[in-house]
Amino acid sequence: MMLNGEQRGLVLSGLALLLILPAMLLAASYFKIVEMGGEATTNQIAMDKVSYTARDIERAIKYLMKTGQAFDNLTLVELADNYRTATGLLVDIAGVDTDNDNAIDAAIISVQDPSAVARYSTMLEFFKLTVMIFPDMTTYRPGDNVTFTVYVGNAYGAPQEEATVDLRVIDPNDDNVFFASGLTGIDGSWENSFTLLTTAELGPYLIIADAIKNSRTGSNTNTFEVKHDIRIQIIEPDKDVYSPGENENVVARLTDETGEGVTGASVTFEILDNTYFLVDGPVVMYYENDGVYGESRLLPSLVGAYYVRVYAMKDWYIDNFADKLISIT
Image (cartoon, rainbow, N blue to C red; front, side, top):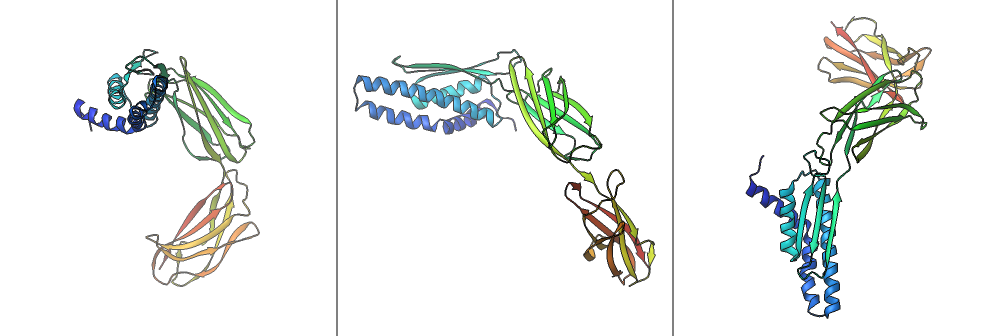
């Protein structure tokens, strides 16, 4: 929803007043203490008040940025007005576009006591870039292709074109397995990819992206996992059509992405009707010879279509299941 100028000012004033509540409390206590002290005390209180207010303004601006609220010079002027009203100090806040990209990336803050006893000025810089990393999946298998998209924005998240990105991938043994560098496009993104070795280490991988444009820098991390695949071949039931109540075994063979047999997995099977409602199971299966076996089961007595579903799970393997469609007539 778009706000008009008056509405925007009211919203900002409420937020700014909430943010500067500590400064308002200090202002109230300031005048009470002045009544009780001499000139030296008054001067010290004035200096403390100016310093505290300036630091609180920095805190308020950093909060606005941290919460993703884009602002311009009008916002900063309104913020200064609120502080000026609450504290009685001369407050000025001006935004600066240091790299001419039409976005404020610094703020000059000036706070002064009306009697000129104390003055504080500083420039708060927003030079940090926003960096985000997006792998195309969260889990991969050895030999898979891994694609990354890195997004670079300014302090507000607005896209930054031609930012230099350096990206590294570190495996579970802390070895660098991939490095690439490039420039972001007009939408602030840069994409690259690499292929995992078929002998890639299993476990969590760390992605690190560093970005720089002009004098501004930023970095971020993300993770993905590499696991083996479990492929399930249902050997029995070995027919498509059964009689009601017929006795039948469930037998499956498990392999990984290379075709090698998988042992030590936790395997169960269930029988589901044609709406995938559970009819029987789950039943724990056991290893025997080169397959995984389930105990003999009496198939449902009602005619219709049914699914025999086999589940398989193992650490550092991707959970999987397979269905066998049968008919009872």
